[in-house]
Length: 232
Ligand code: SAH
Image (cartoon, rainbow, N blue to C red; front, side, top):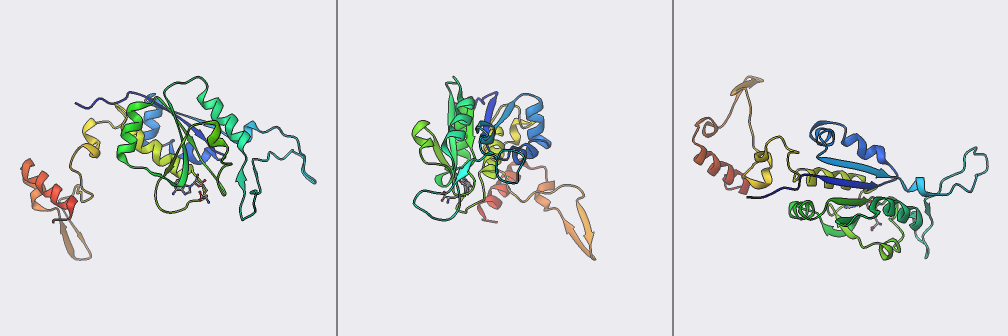
């Protein structure tokens, strides 16, 4: 019997916390937060910058968190110290903590990674890059793993952070109402049907495959397995 971790604390280091907070404000993840099965805290590198320079024509000092890359090239690089301070606040004295940095060239994220992380750690720090990425020296200060969510480049690590939070939360006990909902543990296919049994659209009738109405669970599982592998 698989035992699931009852709680996970996510710490998101991002310049744009509202992007991620919005995703957590609805549906299953919002319930998980409400029921204290997961907790998500945000650390904005901008909050760790000393406001020194007041720019011409501006009332407020500009809180710079990025600068031009040494060696030239396009884009900006996120400065090391604001991120180091943000990570350090998240980590504090925690022991079972993993730090992830999102990078398109990192280790590919998948379900087995989500399971491993949820079974091993109580705290996960998710560091979201923007622009050209983060100053490489941050990785000399903290041991962190580069993680990619796929072979494409996004504008920032916030969508990857939402993906990790979503998929790791599914592995936390009680986040999905019914343990059996975790399709990672059963045969599931994207070909699913609900009521009505038959509907008509533009003169044509659309029916649910008969097998699903048969009540024969063994046959239904077989059918789903074949649908999943593409045999059917
Ligand atoms: N030139 C950089 C990419 C910058 S994209 C490089 O080659 O690493 C800006 C930020 O978005 C990255 O720092 C990273 O945090 C995030 N990002 C973009 N695509 C991603 C992907 N496929 N997986 C994970 N993070 C990604």
